[in-house]
Image: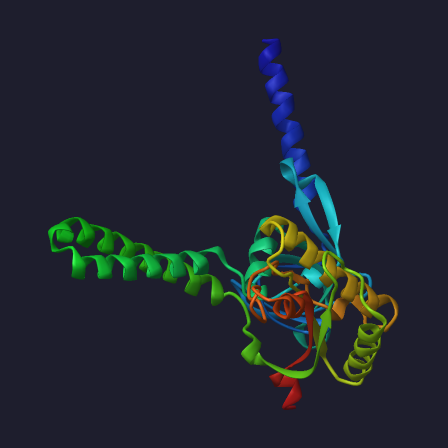
Amino acid sequence: MQRNRFFAKLLTICFLVCVSVFSVGDDQTKVQGMIISRAADTLIVNGPDGKTTVVLTPATDTRDNKGVFGLEKEHMGNVVLIPGLKVTVIGQPGAGGSLVAERIVVDGDDLETAEMIQSGLHPTAQQVEANVAQLEAHSKDLASHGTQLAAQKENIETNEQNIAENTKDIEEHTNRFMQLADYDVKAQATVKFKVGSSKVSKEDLDQLKQLADTANGLTGYIVEVVGYADATGSAAMNEELSENRAKAVVSYLIQQCNVPVRRIVAPGAMGEYQPAASNETKEGRADNRRVEVKVLVNKGIAGS
């Protein structure tokens, strides 16, 4: 009997917690959907009821609800609000049917996938390349080893199926994100780094200052920052190093160049992937230790 009472009380507490976590005030509006476009302080969220224009303000609270019933909350900056991210927006009705965001809830796992696609790095893309290479190797074996034709044919069919599945996965994820073709590049800079360092040189600080001055003169711009490393060391170490380099550039743009944090999309960390030059030479490795910065304006704004 006492055990039944205990479970009854537990269910009551769980219900009350759920109500407190997901309740929305009578004077507030709630929209759920996926970000399909971003231009400076404005998001377009596509949900079951259609598209909603969401307006960001300095008071907008972006968070990731974690734990049981979402009771653990990790507060984030608006820089994580990139195209392709699923969000829940709570706020007040604004002009022209817009929604002025007071609180935006995101999913941390979904954000990680969005950042990978936004930076051009997706595990399935690498798997497709590996499968294609393996398929070509099997084709050569067929020409020189006719006696192994049956076994090789089975491997080819398996690889073709894997390629089709991976390609479909890439298309589904890529369609979730707004491509760079939707933007005009108004300014760009490449910041170089010494071996193992994430410190920005004096010359590159001046370059970033000029880029920021150009950006601050534009309407509705956003800044994309992507860090890279050479192939020296482990892949995990290089990914962390490229992230630290991107963060160093972002910090300087925000703190010293007056670029609002809401204008910078989540920085990408590419590690040793997508090298600008060969890692076999000293000069090539120097070119690969870099951060690429682009000032982008949505073509819809640029053409208006």
